Length: 212
Image 1 (cartoon, helix red, strand yellow):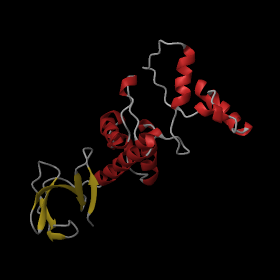
Image 2 (cartoon, rainbow, N blue to C red):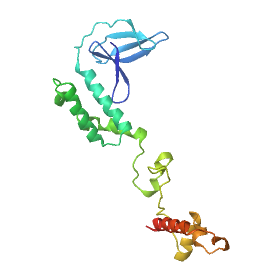
Image 3 (cartoon, rainbow, N blue to C red):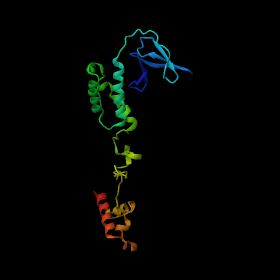
Image 4 (cartoon, rainbow, N blue to C red):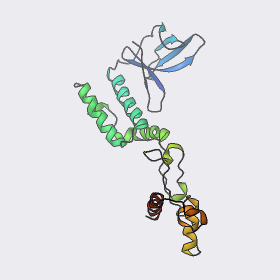
């Protein structure tokens, strides 16, 4: 049975008959795979879609290993979760190690699996694919798309701490009231008499939220 996993760098690995192979060459009608153990020169040829064997594997000089496929599968699950979830990477690592022990009772996970310090760099690279890097300064904060929305789909209220105002505070709030579209509720104008009490109360609430 042909099964595929990935290396920590995202390269495809062929698992067959308790051996692992990496792709060596792509031809028009076939792909040649070489044993992952570089001290072994064994090769196997698959069709161009890597669905079936065209030429059986040549003799191996390395030993079969039934655990490599399991280890790569578990690491692949860690990588997938770090891309799709917000749980911390140490938590994901611990959960998957425990799950591996439950699924494979006889597998000595403590001695076979790489430590978190050995694979955390690759996991953080996977996370960076879907999640932006945390900013270290205010100037680095740039929110786009869904990152600008709250849970209800509305825009977050962002504070511009780089804004400087040297004029009277009354002028500042008048400008802000105009910017957020509340001028008709607070500024004295002739056409404001038709505003209902409910609308004024809602506007007071919005303005209070702005202040706090």
